[in-house]
Amino acid sequence: MIRLTVNPIVESATLMRRVMVVLGSIGVTSLYSSLILVRALLGRLTRERVDRYTRDWSALLLRLVRVNLNVEGRIPDFEDGRRYLILCSHASHYDIPLSFVALPGSIRMLAKKELFRIPLLGPAMRAGEFPSIDRSNHQRALEDLQTARDMMESGIVLWAAPEGTRSADGSLGTFKKGCFHLALDTQAVIVPVGIRGNEKVLPARTCQINLGQPVDFVVGEPLDTAGYGREQLPELMEAVRGRIERARGER
Image (cartoon, rainbow, N blue to C red; front, side, top):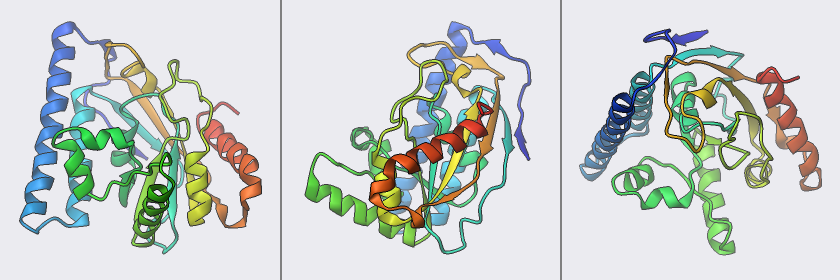
């Protein structure tokens, strides 16, 4: 069990505090993006260094909102030579930093291509081996898929949100097929993760921030996709959904 506690008191942030959180988050993100880019320019950027930077960045983001984090469940050995894909419920922008802090290994988010257009952050993500798959272009999608497969073969654990977009009320939304196609194409072991309480830190489509929010990060039972064929995609999606719901205490 891991607990990251700065202040257990839950409170709604004032306008001034919200401004400080936003500015602090931009500053922290710019700092670590710059560190990655400078090291890459000097030829001194390693995967281990990126792992450290992403965890330090994530911990600082969580401290800005004083998250009270509790991690539950059995975490797989990500260094056992198999390919791993973390599929996580998605109700907050903080899901990704929560995952970086809670889980070991070289975790990289499967990112939307729009994020790579953001100054500093986009180039840093490319330098730090964050993949993206553009399924609107068939040839590019094949190349992106091969890149993702090569990354997983080399020990990177990919993170994705099967819902695609944040849930407005914290409930589990409709799953998209993209990340499940990736799991089948790479014969990955899916690690389902359910997060509870994260939707209250920064509710979707609002500017409200709640400080000191308790968040449960629950790792569910892994599912090996090696026994699934493409015609079994709906069964795979339902099986993963069930495991995430159980992790979230909904079953």
